[in-house]
Amino acid sequence: MGTIMGMGSSHWPAMIQPDEAKPWPFLRTLANDPRVPAELKNPLNWPAGVRAEWGQDEGVSAHREHRRRLVEAFRRLRAEIQAFDPDFILMFGDDQYENFTEDIIPPFCVMAYPDLTSHPFKGGRRGRSNVWNEPEDHAIKMRSKPDVAKWLAHRYLEEGVDMAYAYRPLHWEGLGHAFVNIQMYLDYDRQGFDVPIIPVQVNSYGSKIIGNRRAINGAGQEPDPISPTPRRCFEIGRITARILAASPWRVVMYASGGWSHGFLVEKHHYLWPDVESDRLRAQQIRDGREAEWQELTVAQIEDAGQQELMTWICVAGAMHELRQKGDVIDYVETAGVFNSGKCLAVWRT
Image (cartoon, rainbow, N blue to C red; front, side):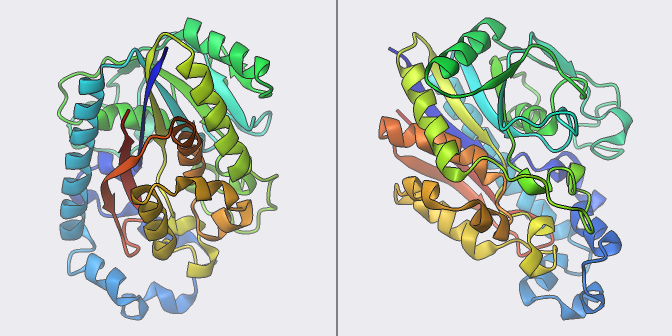
């Protein structure tokens, strides 16, 4: 019988860059998004919490503490993985107009790739500098389990899930940031991280996947079809748990995604996240009430800018099926300067 541990974290790209790089997602929205009211261009008109994060150095000092907590939490997640000693990690992550674009955007896709090499810094994709001082051509190799991934796609179809699958990338060299960033952060101290990873794409961004491609503002864009519903994501998780529980493997089911993203929250002028909704989600994990997530609607998810919660709902469905209780390792909040709420959690056997 299989043994499963659940896990989830943010894959926040700005964690790659030095603190001195400043909060570029926030600054980009502030400067370039026409939906931001003119009065909010002036820091004096920001909420007190945002002004405090901004401080006297445009967020550099506040980001230092933000990073410290995230790094410490990732170190704890790594230790949990090492102690559990999995055969592989099944990672649910979103694709933000990287591998899947206008020609096809599947609701879910098992990526049964062979071992892949990604170049996360190539072409300035994640800025011109990084905290590890690694060169632009630095390669990140991710071990995979293509035979197991192919078997998993087969089992999903047998269980009534119309699961897409792929044997090679479509538009993106290597893997998108939802997957590669996690590997980098679990190896933040650069000691090596060699656990195989099977990526599963979830179309978390739904109606904003084209308009907000690669986090660029979607002003004036017609919405796309919606994402899979929270109820369906929860069902996928429950089915996955049953499939893996009947397998011979030890598996970490990992949700890669931040929570409310400022650049997605219309009611906050695309500047700051829905902090209250994020706090509720963290408390639901602490209380063992993640099953409530399946009752959310896509409209509620989009209103809160919590599109990336969809990957977490997949894992939550599995943990509900297995009756495993979650533990919030840390919940790192931002008033707005650092774009998104970041939870790191584990569900132990």
